[in-house]
Length: 96
Image (cartoon, rainbow, N blue to C red; front, side, top):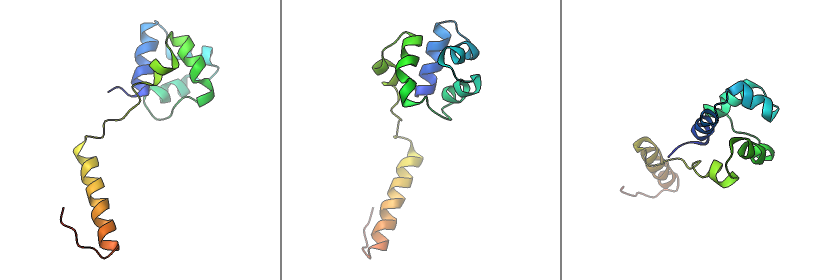
């Protein structure tokens, strides 16, 4: 699934806008738009509606791809390790 940053970048490009043009319309810096598109930050909740309007989509459509794919093996391994650590801390011996 796409991240919100990828979605913003794709929609902006479909509209033929530069990051600077989108930034001007949103009253933010082009650095802010760049951070959104690289998933280093997200648009403020109060500006999501305006962003969706500028990009020509609904808020739901803009946000629908925000889910992260947690099927990554490293994430599963980390979760398993956390459960084992909790069990050890509780004095339980569980076999996973």
